[in-house]
Length: 204
Image (cartoon, rainbow, N blue to C red; front, side):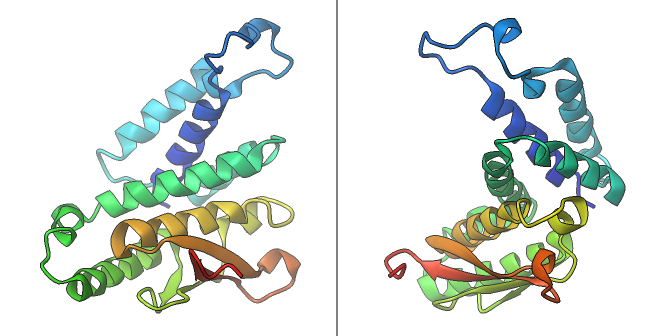
């Protein structure tokens, strides 16, 4: 499993736990919620994952599930999952290296979206174990047979990670602007988790 996933989850947790600079925030030691994201433990793990990504870039599946479970116990888990999904997508899009920047320099929009769509499908399949269909169409579709979110948690709360990740991946590589609707979920008895893209302006 790519270390980008637990890295993004812990980075999102740290980001959410940072105090607001509005003058009304309680000191950390007086806060009613212990800010795990600001702890030395989380900082050390983030540094460890960054180091792993300079080498083979992978962690065990069980380790990734453990971080998902850690996030899933929080009352603000949905915010962390969504932020982490976007972060993961940006990390993974950057892994295709020069292609990401070259996409914006291609002369024809149709060529840019075709090349970007192929890259998005490869990234989704290789790193997120997902099948991405019709990424250039009006309603891109994604299928994940064994989502980490369902394996780690009871219910569908963690599926927000995937919805945000796929929407951001399509935005960065294909120019998709919209949201991903979770139409089927393993947590509710479906054979796989499935999402359908809805472009901005088509919500009605």
